Length: 265
Image (cartoon, rainbow, N blue to C red; front, side, top):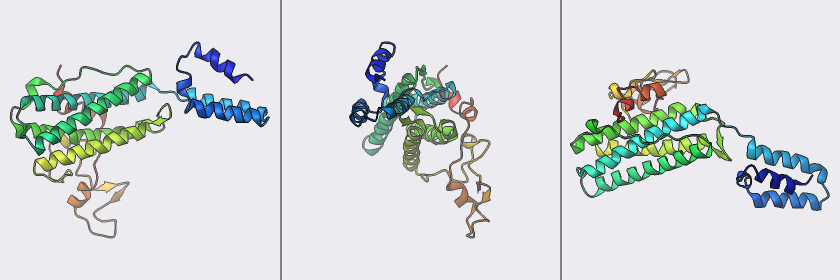
């Protein structure tokens, strides 16, 4: 078996073939050591494993759809903060610093998701803008919208986690990447809430239209356990509800009463 000839032929139809391997240096080093040991009988097994890693992972359109859904929300948030900064209503000092940093994070998320979708041979969504007519003039109202966007984003990412289990981009777990973004969105939500003088988490009495879903934030049961009565310790409904974020489905998030109604047509 001439592995180098195989790779040479493969590179004629796939210019990225070497880039698909975890480490081309490690791959060739292992091949060389296998040959030195005379263990050529094991070479086909190694080569099969090598190419399984390079080409074995397939990405379905469902995963691309999930990534584009996340990208849509990130683009919406990014443009909202662009408008917020350009509006000139954010007080200087800590508030301006916080909003600028959150916008920077959203831009990083947009870049990562866009590049990932391209790497998976998908077509990333583009041009998603926050509806100009829905953008508030007053700083206090802008913060209220920011809170709605961040709270919704946290629940939206959580709602799609199951769809990304086992999905890979090369050797990178897409679920891991999504959860890394999810945790940053949660920090955004907590900080915006603090800026508004609220608790960093969603409380029991905030069940307005923003948080309505099939599983509302007022839920007090997790994995079939009623947290207020079945833990051997007494927790109030407020404690139980505030301890967990509930998921929002894609349809719930993109509903015209939520993020879907904030996208510029």
